[in-house]
Length: 120
Picture (tube, rainbow, N blue to C red):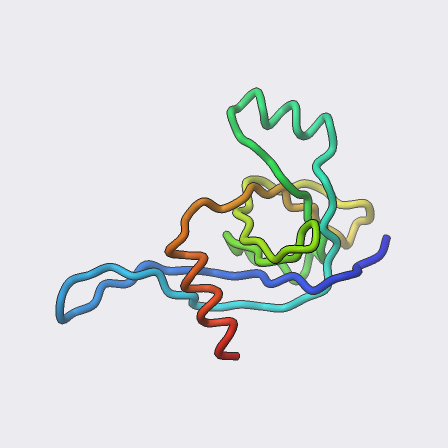
């Protein structure tokens, strides 16, 4: 098991501007940890497909680092992508957790996250 790349665990909240009432997505917290991004296994993919969920990646990280973040920003096939966590399962060892993810199609959240990460 090689944790070969940096993975961002991200929490996002939707806030309302008090002046004009417009709602915007804001990144509230993030953690950068080491993890492993890999393709989804066939059995997991079949189960997700039967529930009409399209999984694109499985991300394995340390269990103690994960605290129910909804989004993950990581490099997959050479390109940074925003993933949405669909479900979680046990990892290869007792101290690991496997997060099954799909590509996030929400462009406003992706823009908010990339803007915040570029500032830091």
